[in-house]
Every structure is written in C-alpha cells, then in structure tokens.
View 1 (cartoon, one colour):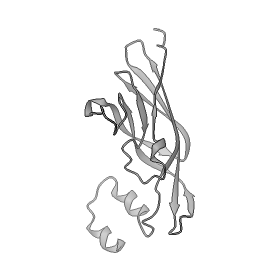
View 2 (view 1 turned 60 degrees about the vertical axis):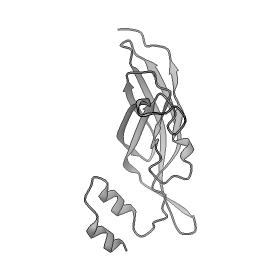
View 3 (view 1 turned 180 degrees about the vertical axis):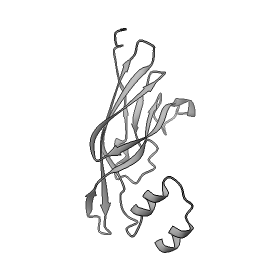
View 4 (view 1 turned 90 degrees about the vertical axis):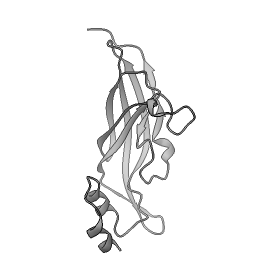
Length: 150
C-alpha cells in the first residue's frame, strides 16, 4: 500500500517525515511529550517571556503494543494562549503565539515572547500527533514578577 501512496502523495514540507515514519507500522506512536512546564516573566516593555520546558520522546509500537524508543528531531507546534484550547471561552483571539520549533529527544526549554499575559502554553497543543497521553501537552503558565528595567 505504501508503494501506491508514495508516488501519488503531493510533496509538502511534511511529506518526507510522514513517508519515513509511516511504513510499514501504521500503529506507531510518533511522539510523546512526558511533561511540560511553563513560566512567564513580565518584561519592562509590557510583554512576557514564556519559558516552556518539555521532555519529548519518540516511540514506535508494534502490533502488540510493545514500544521501542527512537531518536526524535522534528518540528512541533508550540503554542501560548490566554485561554485553554478546546475549552469554553477559547477563540482565535486566545492564541498569543503559535510557531514550529525543532524538538529533540529529552529535556529542553523553548522561549517565546508574547504581548499579553499568558495563561496556557504547550507543545502540540491541538493534538495533531499520535500521543497516548495528550493531556500532558498543555499546562497553566506560572507568571512571575516583572523584571527590573535596565
């Protein structure tokens, strides 16, 4: 089936990654975020610096559910919001920042500057990736005191 799909699939920035990850195990879990923490610091100019700490891993699962870890080095959506995505009150205006960042296996921190007070942040916030626990992709942002003016 993959030999039929590959020649007819339009080329896009994601096509190579999808083509490499898809065959022959369609039941694979391409990525899992085990934890996410987010803190924000108010800046003198009124913006906020948000530090999102993530721990990411990539696993392949066989038909019996056994998982094997593989290296991860792929772009992920990173989002910062004024309201929790998917909950009442969330609108397009709730999105303060949405960007793609390269994420590798293990712990790392992604920093984002936003113009309003953030309330939620996370990795793969709209759950586009296969993930056995998508509830740990978003966290409330802990907002600290303003940084002193320089």
